[in-house]
Image 1 (cartoon, rainbow, N blue to C red):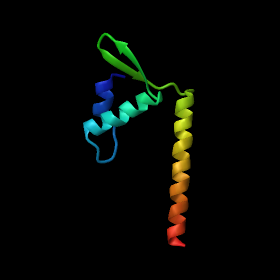
Image 2 (cartoon, helix red, strand yellow; image 1 turned 135 degrees about the horizontal axis):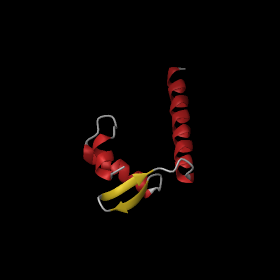
Image 3 (cartoon, rainbow, N blue to C red; image 1 turned 60 degrees about the vertical axis):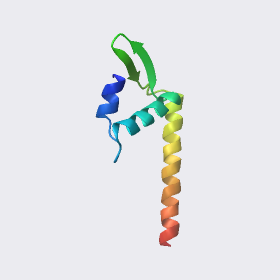
Length: 76
């Protein structure tokens, strides 16, 4: 997909296009999203077998677990 298309059509709660570009740039920086130069611009892709992607999902799972534990502690 084209970089500008992804930035415009992506979704993040209460975010502007510029904020979504920042998120996208972070995903590119951490090699979760790969970029390839093309005649029409920059093309983006995600390799489902990417180690960086798997590490990202593990990190998200850990954050969700930590948030869940914090929620249980505040209601106990």
